[in-house]
Amino acid sequence: MAKPNGAHQSALQHTLIYKVEVCLPLGRCMKKAFLPCCLSSSSCNSGSMDKTVVLITGCSEGGIGHALARAFAARDCQVVATSRSLSSMADLKNDPRFFLQELDVLSDGSVVQSVANAIERFGRIDVLVNNAGVLCVGPIAEVPLSSMQRTFETNVFGAMRLIQAVVPHMASGRKGTVANVGSITVQAPGPWSGVYTATKAALHSLTDSLRLELKPLGIDVINIVPGGTKSNIANSAIASYSRMPEWKLYGPYEAGIRARATLSQGMKPAPTEAFAKEAVARILKKNPPAWFSYGRYSTIFSILHYMPLFFKDFMWRRIMKL
Image 1 (cartoon, rainbow, N blue to C red):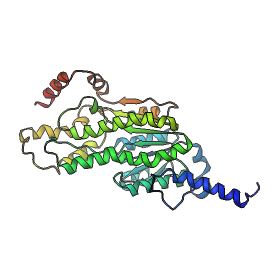
Image 2 (cartoon, one colour):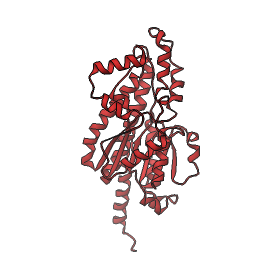
Image 3 (cartoon, rainbow, N blue to C red):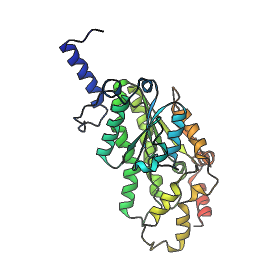
Image 4 (cartoon, rainbow, N blue to C red):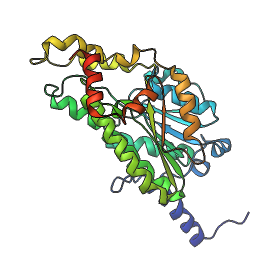
């Protein structure tokens, strides 16, 4: 094969560097220009170029993200599994199907670095799954604003950080899929989880707008809406709830408020692996659906969405003994 002349080689380098730079948010492009792995990294083999590259946030063992990572790997995808701590994904460490990255969705720098690392390794990101999230339980009138802000920062702005880092890269190739993980609680909001539900409602709305905005760029967007699904979310919710102040106005309801933290895990939740398998099958479709919901009570909540408010209020008052 003939060696390219100086001008041709310069143009080639410019094109390759541009493709990497546009994958990062405007104004945060890292000067350490990464080339696609097949050209610059010996750690990437040619076989990985044929596989769908999936980046997932919130992949700690025992959670939905972890199950999604395994389900994508089972479909012969190359998975960039991320979490705030590598130790929380230790069981994936020696499996070549996974590229583990520490990623804090609250940090711009962490997001930019993880995306750059993924592109350096594989040359592209085909699918982004925004799964990382936290639960916030408590009466809205007394939940500290700092807790509300952290929940919105994680569940809403965390997803937007990833989207703004990854979408420009997808757009350069006019191909990609973004999957945002929402919640069935948006369809029939109840007491004691209003902050969490509000964050997921915001994410649902943003997802609907993104689906329209990104389609002209060749990018599909799907809203993944879990019903009751077995996961470790209750453990993290209880840990978070234990840091809440003593309720001044809702003391008589404290037991019910605390119970809300584990509600999804106490109603025969769907197996995480079953949810992940079904969700991945939809995400990987050539034309993925706009909405996919699966899990305990997902059908009931879909129906409740269309019921009058007085009926939903009556239902929640009976369930929560208000």
